[in-house]
Image 1 (tube, rainbow, N blue to C red):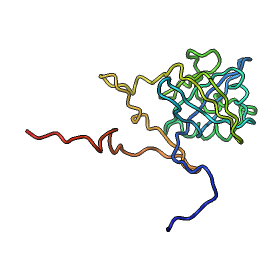
Image 2: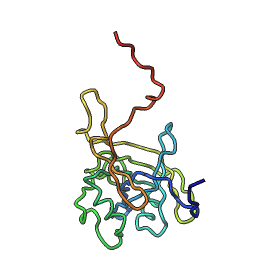
Image 3: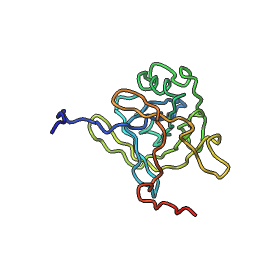
Image 4: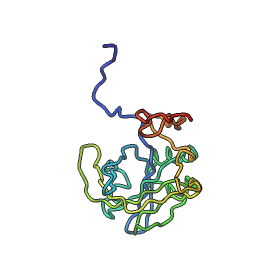
Length: 191
């Protein structure tokens, strides 16, 4: 075999680079960049994020049981990176990035106005896993930016230019290569 063997590690790349927004019971608001986010279940709609206990946002999420996953785009890449390397203990990340917190349906966690998709979540379970605790949450509400909707009511996230994170770098997505099921779809007969 020509493959090199590395030590065990997280090489499941690329992953979405999301901004998770949260709020505290004393009115504080913060956001942090998370690459360990994912879908857990479709019915009921559930997601997970994994957060280190020492992160400023950890206690806010644990105490309020709320967070919002905000998808990032090429236009939000610099803010996403900033929120991953600066602590909300030291700076107001909303002020520093120019992003806008807006309250949706949750009591504490704001959505980020500039994000094309904001997924409001309510924590169901916290799993201590080691370096990170996983917050498993039900999706309460999803907000999408109407400028990416077409006349048929289809949402086109690709037009927002979403980004992913892969092994220390951010990347834009390329052209689509096929729709779900395209490999088995029968070709239409020409008349």
